[in-house]
Amino acid sequence: MAEYKGPKFRFIEEISAEALAASGGFKPRRRPLLVKGALKNWPASERWTFDKLAQLRRRDGSEVVTSFQNGLVEQGVTREPVIQPVAPYLLKLAESAKTIREHRLEDIGLLPDRRRRSLTAADEFHLDWGYLKTFTADKVYLAQWYILNEFPELRKDFEIGNLWPGLRKTWEYTFIGPSNTVTGVHYDFPNNWFCQVSGVKEFILFPPEQSPHMCKSKKYDWGATLSDIDISQLDRLPEESAEFAKAEGIYARVETGDALFVPSKTWHAVVSLVPSISLAVFGLTPWEIVAGGLPSETRALLHRLHLYRWGNCTCHRMDKAAQSNQVAGA
Image (tube, rainbow, N blue to C red; front, side, top):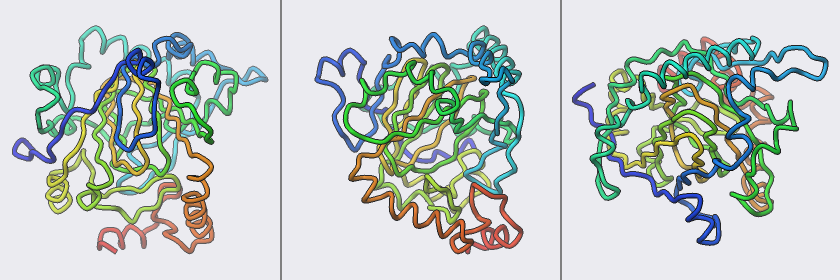
């Protein structure tokens, strides 16, 4: 992997929360934007820790048990989810985060700290894909947890309306997981404010015009369009890797307290450097719901009726026939 350079990248456009407010606040845009320190005054910055979230109990006093993502769902065969209690998992992450802070392991990554500090906003650069070879695909990840639906009182901890004014319907998903996890290359139909409550994540992003190099997958996902590019296995995918190398991307390091705006249909992948707590807020205006929601719901209905990519999807285990077709490039 050392000889594989992959796409060229530039740093994301970024602005401080104070500068954004002074400029009149966030305006609709088509390019990603990193807002540094956006969450620092939100209650979530203090209340959403691994230890405190581990104390959550249902109304009847019972422990919280939910479904965990098992491995990387965007590529390959989707595995059965793991059902387990949340509290022991969070407490283990708390211990892991403490160890990582003590050893400053967050300084490594796709763009190690020493390289990052030597680059300017005008520079083009390549990433260190070999870093991902140390990862394992067997980790469970508390992904897309509807925590705000289960515990609506926690909504007051996020002041997303101040960051994202306007009339829209939103969907909020919590992502809580260990270091060395990957969310595969994909794009979402809605715009997304990704709020990093704690931890550090690296984003690689590709605007819609880079789609010819993104190797669109036939694997179905209700809310996203997936890619066949697996950034953790690039040496095993020569055709996809060659096409991927033609792309021009954007790199973002999203740290505790930051908020990242990911526009609709922007391809991206995420690497978690340390145990992290994140909230993704997807939003659609009424017009966007009418214009894009109907086609999405139509595909979802056809999928449930076994008429559209049934078995080759993120919501069901892939059957043998679907696996064979995928290998054959069908």
